[in-house]
Image 1 (cartoon, rainbow, N blue to C red):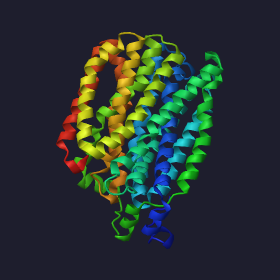
Image 2 (image 1 turned 180 degrees about the vertical axis):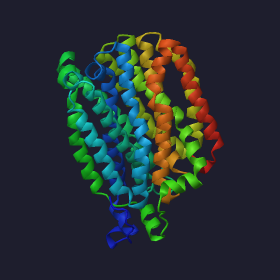
Image 3 (image 1 turned 90 degrees about the vertical axis):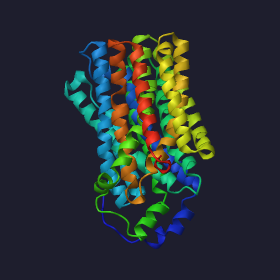
Image 4 (image 1 turned 180 degrees about the horizontal axis):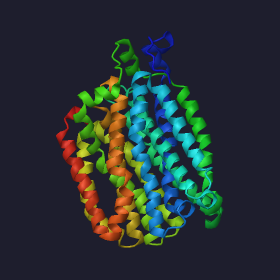
Length: 434
């Protein structure tokens, strides 16, 4: 990827950019990319619970195999900040569009390769090692995707509409979760569990190549954002964005990371961990467990635009504060809901994902807000992905370990502490910093 700085050509004039990038095209391009990326990401999360313990860790007892599978799941979160630095550098130097295309390809190729990997029975220990490498590739690509998609939306937003535009790329997460859960639900209707474990699990990974092609077509049809074009004209770009970021914006990085902490902990307790708990502990059938997750993804998606509208009316900071307080209160109900039968589990999933929609719908715009254009891609991406390390990478593992060793009450404490940390960081942030 070239790092050369060039003057804007007539075809990339800011006025032309605004004419070519219609609102519908911009919002669809930001949504379709994150949908594909999160579909790939969550297909892995679902398979990490239902399939990978059997395919890649067959010689371990069930709980050890599950924890090993969750360990490979966590690798992507440690790869994401590296992807944020690399893709963020080019996103702030070369442009949002080109970088988004590269990130989508990185994520997509890694996902397709997972669907082609031989099992442990075929090549032994190399199978989980290759799985871990591909999971790293998924995280590396997603680390560069998310920030660019948010900027594609918010940097094209008209005055007063930044929270609403910034909500659209966030919709990719629930749509991706819905599609990934739905694919496995459909496969279990069309084939036996034995066939799914044998070869059927490969279908969603390999089939994602179709979604990748659609995403590339859409991404290649857009032009650069007006904000980045102005940064070129004013010669505002810096040689090493990450260096300036850590030199001049450390406070925003730290606060932003923990502003998003509760969002990540809540989501991965309410998705990957919940799916594992339902199947492995409560012995709920795969299909029923997936249906609970599908219901959660629908509510997740419905509450994201609600968050966007509420933020426009009452303020983004105020809605984030209120939602974080609700997450903290919800942590006290977690132990009772998780141990009171399948109906209570459905209630838990519904409330958790509704709260998730309210916080996640605004977190993209909030994390991008404090950074100037010249380092915004890098800053938003690194902040989001640092939050992924602290809040998401080990959340299913930690929740499972706490449940096994101390009981469900401590899983509630885990979520409650995350909410307290997030609330403190929001309150410490100025109005222009979230």
